[in-house]
Amino acid sequence: MVGTTQPHDDALVVMLRIGEYDVKRVIVDQGSGVEIMYPDLYKGLNLRPDYLAAYSSPLVSFDGKVVILRHQIRLPVQAGSEVVEVRFTVVDTYSPYMATVGRPWLHVLRAISSTLHQKVKYPSGDRIEEIVGS
Image (cartoon, rainbow, N blue to C red; front, top):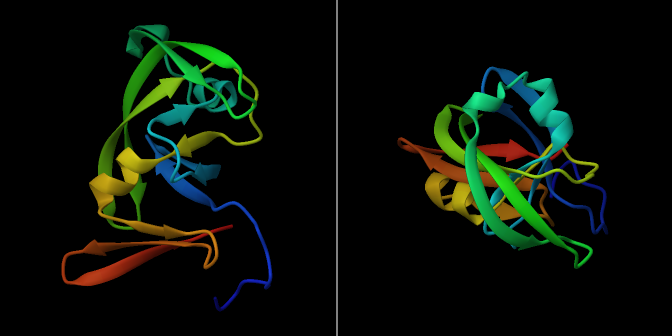
């Protein structure tokens, strides 16, 4: 817990390299079964509409509203020295975050996240790497 002010109940928010850009305000949500990209990030990455794959499925948002998902896109996400391809679902709803990464991303990295410690740790070769919350 070095570097954290205790006690706290802060969300785990990190910076990740998504595509070719360093993206701040990415929330790590162990309760999410999908990775989500919000409109500000989609616009900021200058992604062309033809990069998007059509997708139609409902999602229940934080406030209990049902959001109809329209598109998905696969992008490389770099965490430390590890790069994994992530399928983001693009939603057209407001969020203070740029993106949400959830269980699928954590499982591919074989990562453990801790809001208490404000860190994500994962194996990389013969060592353990970590991402520190911001």
